Length: 319
Image (cartoon, rainbow, N blue to C red; front, side):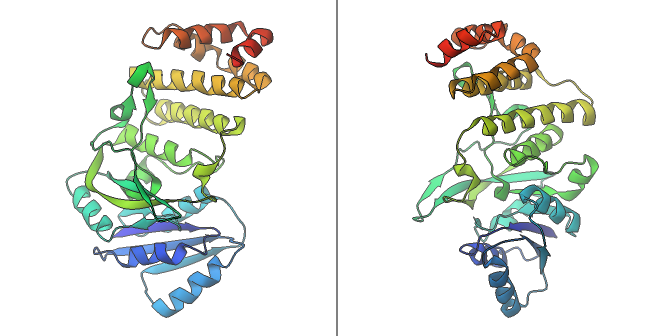
């Protein structure tokens, strides 16, 4: 059985469409766990009325008194799940009717984590296909070094994956509840450290974009700091849980992203915050500045960072 976990918070406009896309699946051995995270609109009432008419014993509704955030609700769903496999569908997203069936068939090819490509679905119902990677692989296989910039390129969203539940339990992988951004990226990165992903060759998930979406968050200092927290958590996971040294290309990603985040914070005008981070990540920045794989101008900029001179940093941010 596949347990589908659906966090619900203030999505009265889209939630029934999301539920219906689970009910319409051609693969029928599923349970749907809807967790209402103290919605303040009519989401709860709308879902309860729908379920009263539907009378489907495979659907479970959990109503929380207090708002705890999407990571908490997903983790609660994992604990409540009775299925051998776990999938997630946000209450404003959709699946093609074949999503669970084709994902399940791929899992049976000896994979523990499978994904499909997805479409961005806009409010005017226009579709835009996501970045396509079309590969099976571990975390190292999802590293791009285009233009001498080492970055993780994840071709999936939280709603286009199916995972063996046992894997999450053995390695204690869950969504970090103190993070409000990048929580799903850390979840995927940890999974890809321990298991090879399997690609399902169909685009069957629809990731809705609207003004309330988290993907519309503005790039502020706090946004970039959340990415640093995610990178640090990934390092801790590899060191403590997997008990192995991070590989060369993955190190390059960590070094590059740390430099890039600090540069963006300085560029945004928050030079004092930038100085704090330069002190904190001095060793990491030094390593970045000495790796010739990176662009010379980025390495030069990093060496100016290490001087930690506020006057120079103020000049640099205006270049």
